[in-house]
Image: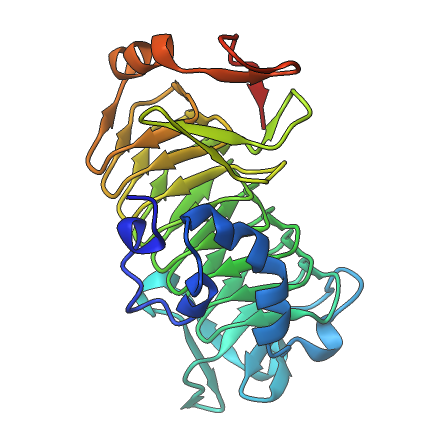
Length: 291
């Protein structure tokens, strides 16, 4: 129920080894930074440092100024980006737009990917193929982004995994979290990762308590989960495959089975039975959580 395989189809996710030797799915969160550092192959070269004054193209081992190529951008996630030089197409070329900031060299950008103006990326970060990093996005490091993903306008990501086809198109916060394949976050979704009380996140799942050992723990969203606009998940939320969260809800911590429909009625019932952690140990308490 709480294994990585219970939440994600791993066969098509190339960096699936991050889930190796993981008993509980949340244990992968503490592996993200060393895994990304150990697997990335930096390809951003001279683009590191100050805000870029010109757009550049990454192709194989070349960094090509925009003035030397023609760029035709369609739906990036569908592979519609076309870059050519003197009439010859450059297959797999990626575009890093003027106005982007790549803070350090521990960054890998995949094929057919676009980094729009105003994006700021810190390493270690791996971005997959045919992924769209939209204007104003902030990747704070320890980010593992899959293929055909969308990191949206003013979306912030840190110590997180977005598996293939995961999309956070608008105004999202993704901290210490894992988004499965084909997850879609509605505009304004926040995956809160830090409780107000100064203690590691502990989970109460079907009457059994699990010590995660994690002070920061956002959410685990299984494949095909969808969240409505302006929804917020509390620290330590696990949503099974295909779960649906209604808009404008605060989802309490804990486990929700696959294909759950989480609306106001669904979260009131388990809330009455949930034991929370307070400063004095276990006890019934108010759920005071923040991102």
